[in-house]
Image 1 (cartoon, rainbow, N blue to C red):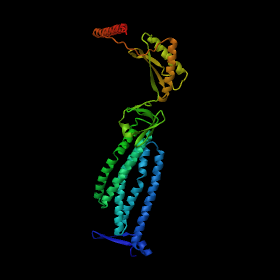
Image 2: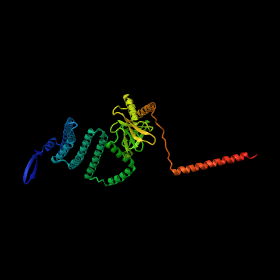
Image 3: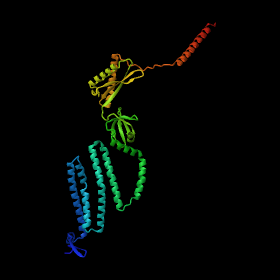
Image 4: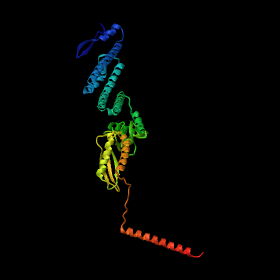
Length: 399
């Protein structure tokens, strides 16, 4: 039978091997090249089906080992069977089938592209899974890991495309020149925007502030954090207004976070009394007033830790200065608590006869100054007396 056996000569010895595809082409009376091409497509389809099936199996195992390193391992394997099997199918097609030169060249180029894609896809996949695992352990980092994972995959994809084009004979020198000049222009035009963007990444990664925190900047702006965006952060003030702070400004600012490490706030209230008042008595009265208000569950005033009063800052220019320390539940509770405590302190001090004097000053002059002032006063008196005598003389003269 013609076409059943293909003979090859090696070292003077004749070998024969069965070629069923050529025999099939002879029986069907069609060109052998068509049979070879059809066999390649069937082989590729089988590789896709088997790869899809293995991917489903690895996916089920990754779900079974969720939140473990087993999930990481099987998730990584999940995306590899299909490209590896396609590589095997293409290599088999080149080695075993008598493809036309054009199709053989296409298969070789496909192998090259697939190998480069796998080489760049694998590390990108590892980084993506690693960032995903971090975001699961620390959900507050999810807003950073998601865009970081996207940027990593985009970067690897761009580099892979460049390598593929270079290997396919597409030279990108002109493209690089254009992109270089264009990137400089874009960077200069978007300098502030890019600065805010990377500052936003820093804020989301380091999280010095979180949503609903009450913060105050060294520039004076303060309020509740309502949104942390890529360009700016929004603060809601006590007047229910929104302050838009660029992320670059926020990253450079000194921030006082009244909600971190906890919302509970130590509230100091300064009280001044006249010198001569018994300080122990004042401390006892202040603690009694604050403790009674806490027992009434007023506003956000906490019973524990218990209120305390100390002779601090102490000796003022004209008063004894005390500080009453109380704990409030959150920053927004301090206003009503301060107002009620001050009202009760005033009422109690008036009842107890404790004075809260106005500021006074005592001026002490040295002897030279006193002598000079006395001389000036004497001169003024003498001048006044002389004026009175002159006035009387004028009145006594006949008209």
